[in-house]
Image (tube, rainbow, N blue to C red; front, side):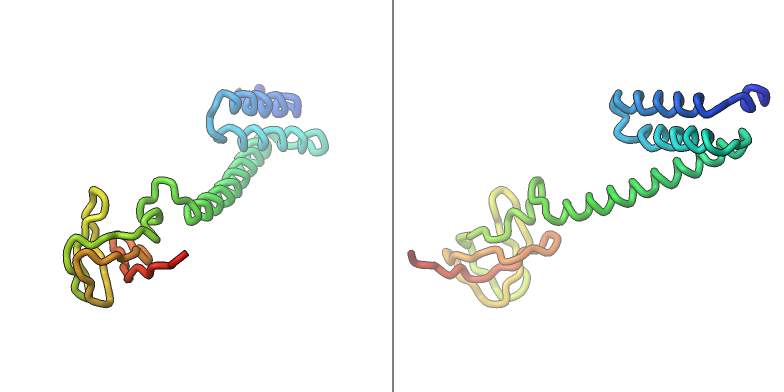
Length: 154
């Protein structure tokens, strides 16, 4: 087995990298991309430096971990930035600016209101009467902050 490992040269690493990259095309969602690139880097490194088989595998492992970790950090940052701007499937963000006609009186502080087919916790700083038009000013978790709706004439 050790004879086989010692006979590995840069062509083997380049071929291994290309096989991993080709396998990535089958839809592995990026798992094999960084491994394939790492194998190619080891192959390129071996064209210039003679490396023992132990050092080849250590380099492959280090490159794989480093590239995967760097990609994960970049993707995580991108995902969190896009989540804060996204409104699709985020009902609480879609409610901001919604005008509601109250079905019952609201006292200052926390109340329960029906909005669509859901009952929400709502907070208002002032008393509001049944039939009054209010607007959802902001949302904190499952708590709606309501204010009076000011009619704008056109």
